[in-house]
Length: 580
Image (cartoon, rainbow, N blue to C red; front, side, top):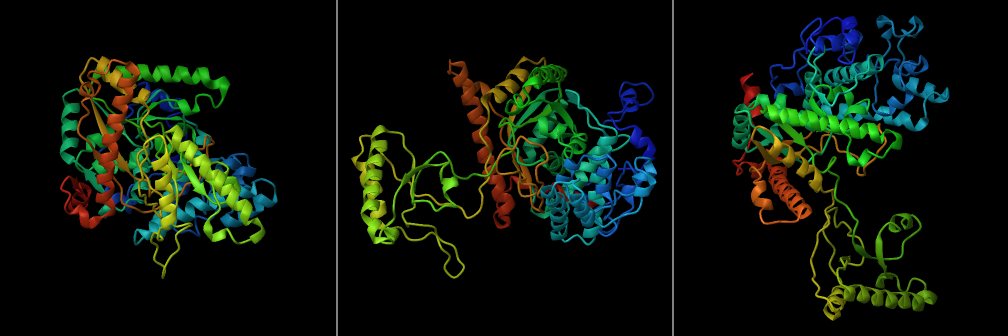
């Protein structure tokens, strides 16, 4: 989310190969599953021990050298064109001939963007995917450069090469994830691979670990053979790397031994797989994707059954730390939906967007006289709208959003601030709710100029599953709500997309994790006789604890001046860097 060795052996011995399976089963070698934690802060710029499956990836040192013939692999049938949408490689995928994977005539390198253009012209690459491939490298390099790293170009190039190396190796020697996956450290160290990439995106000086004392308590509980489940929000594909970087200096065993409950995307998306191979996983198919391919539903459910058996065995053995996102996926930024908007008549470009919202349609005073002959009909429309609004308020349970300023805010001397409210608009709403048969309330509300991120609500069945598993286990278990702040480094799409190959945006930013007090689930559900109500109450209590912790965590990261007055948040990784 690493020591060099023979590339030919690595190509044969990734975990999914028959040789690796023999090692895993004890026939012909020993598979090491634990490694000393690297100094996390140095990982942002340190290229020491950078590991490659194919040695040709270790050669580029500049962007120019990274400009190769990756697209020629498509022509040779060695790389699906679809994969190109996932990254932007300005690289050299030119010398696969050395590994015997390409004809010698493909050895010569081309300028990368020129190759993409030629592929489009040859009908080998859809034009819309050309920009997608270019995107990943460009914004990743920009993120690395914004960190102030002296070796930004070398660092970005080498890390991109390592990603290309690992992803392409999956098309040579694909790995299939079992229900319970152990992180792969030999012959290729996928853990270090993921940590290096994520570390280049972390601003450690503005990152924090929340409540180190609680993490110490968790560590002690695990050492005593007890189980711990972290009920966490989930923001980016980089979350496992962020989690490990925040804990590696102070609680290294937590960083390396945690087991993530992983959904479909992280074990099937070509770009995700190598990063996932470096983590301990319990692999499940989420409810969101069970029905994507109806003929596969039965096998997916069988996989889930096997995973539950593996989880129960782990809890029975004791000493397991499990991370799960009960929301079922990554948090999404907060924007409109679920309210009645008091909105003006839409222009042609706006109409399709407005059609997806609940609206009370009015003609504002600003535009009543725009076309004099239409004024009477506009006023009649407004009258009908007022009648509809009063009926809604009489019926009870209506949430209405209105902008009493009469339109969008406008900057004043390049400074944005809410425009003044029109008194008649405010009075209109006060009068309507006052006349309604049901009680009403007025709430002033501010709309942020930027997207707002907050933990998504937890699924009650997911929380109940974990409670039930640890409650049935032979060893004691504990539930801890945990907040994760990481969205700036790799923000997910604003909407959930079931298709693989999403756009990857990256940025250099502060991140953090923070754990809340242990959840006393017995106290939460005490006295609630209805089973579903009890489950909902438990999920709600866990989620509210995460939201509260997230609010403090976000402030500690985004407001350095406030961080100094927040003793619960520390930066042990900086001390480790100084010591190194």
